[in-house]
Image 1 (cartoon, rainbow, N blue to C red):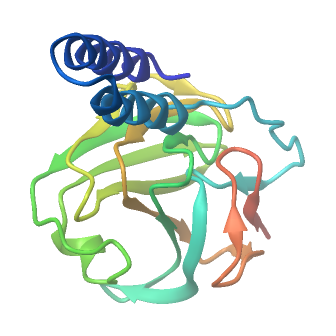
Image 2: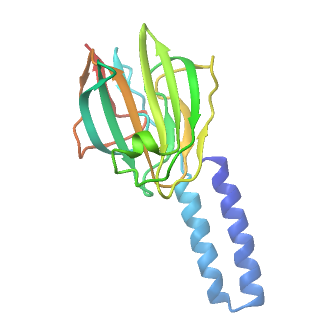
Length: 203
């Protein structure tokens, strides 16, 4: 479990004790229920990381909303978008092994993360990883519920495939950008798991 879950839960349990002491005990069930929710939300399960050569794993849990080849400034790139609902694990993982070359925080709006425009306009953290001669960029994108993006890595840090790199709190979105020299292995509507599901592989 992510440590923050304990902080939220302990505060709510303390509130439940106070409410139960000074008011009717039934009112304590509300903060207790919220404490249980936060303990569940901040879960961080272990994952079996695929070791297949050239595999690019999902940086987040959720539903694939887009998997296509798009043109960016005249250059073709593969884009895979993942929507994280409040029910998904929100710990993010590195899609590939390599070195973190960029971590850039960008302020913005809090549009619904299901909306494609949120990928450009919403508050987000952009991470670029270089490894094995390839460059992978993934974005931690806030949604209309999410209000905080956390990245635990800095420029120059080495990461392995599937390593924990950060978290987005509550509802959100993740986009991953790859050179078009990949074979996309997922389709819209498919549910993926961070670190465990293979999104693409290098051709």
